[in-house]
Amino acid sequence: MNSRNFALFAVFMVQLLYGLNYTFAKFIINEGFIKTFGLTLVRVGGATILFWIFGFFFKKEKIDNKDYFTFFLGAVFGVGLNMLLFLKGLELTSPIHASVIVTITPILILVLSSFFLSEKITKLKIIGVFLGFCGGILLTLLGKSTRVADNVILGNTFIFLNAIAYSIYIIIIKKLTAKYHPFTFIKWLFLFGFFLVLPFGYTEVTEIQLDTFTPYVWYSVVFVVVGATFLTYVLNPLALRSLKASTVGVFIYLQPVIAGVFAIVMGVDIVSPVKLIAMFLIFSGVYLVTKKPKVSA
Image 1: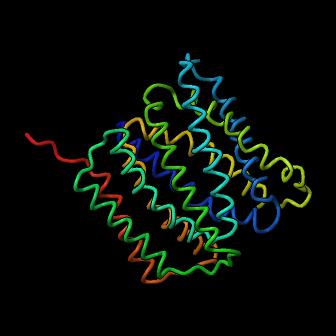
Image 2 (image 1 turned 135 degrees about the vertical axis):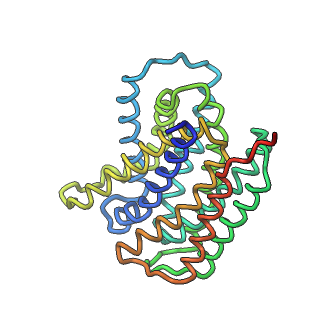
Image 3 (image 1 turned 45 degrees about the vertical axis):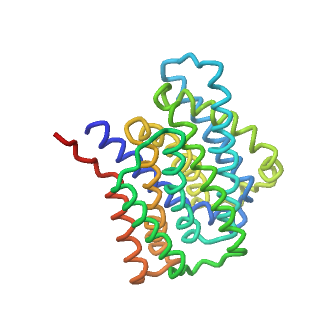
């Protein structure tokens, strides 16, 4: 498997894990096993421990002092704001709505990449983004979920702000991915992020009652920490090494598809023509954006 194919596989796995995470995380929060900010702290704290443990197995790299500030900025947008806003928004809205709203992220990344990374915006990318965006809008306007939400408008707003924070994070770490091994900067990213979310989640973590956890709850928590955090934050930088930030970003269009299919499997949503059409548009958009342009002779 060449580097580009591996990168495409890695970024697909990221979206698969994120797509499943909507249902697992919302289950933990809405069933009252762990409150929102408490789960954020557990998620960041658990991943931080894993990153530092695995970091010892890789060659130690010297970090330029000026890059520590970049690590901190990445932690603010990619860990602190990103995760706090995401889980709080997910608490108040449905997995389907949340996953669809994040489809605005590729648009934000595409614009930011053209300004800050000087990435060329091709016609295929524009068409692909447009098709994916149409699919996302179709799901938003006509798609329905059987999940009960507490405050959809506020929850959707938090998810939208989360998308902005995540887009900025992708732009910030793009240059770091070429300079350092993923474990080198991610372990620092999460260490900074842990102290950022600690004040928000400490009290709620102390209220966790482990004796109420069933095997499914434990599985859900492990998935959120290991699958949707540890693995995704390792695979994303690996993908960014071989793909443009805008290409990685457009894969987020897969999240509504994955989240929707999983919700249907779990019995919390139903198949409809609208969803099938939206999924077709989204997959078409991803294909066009990831299609390698022909090199002219």
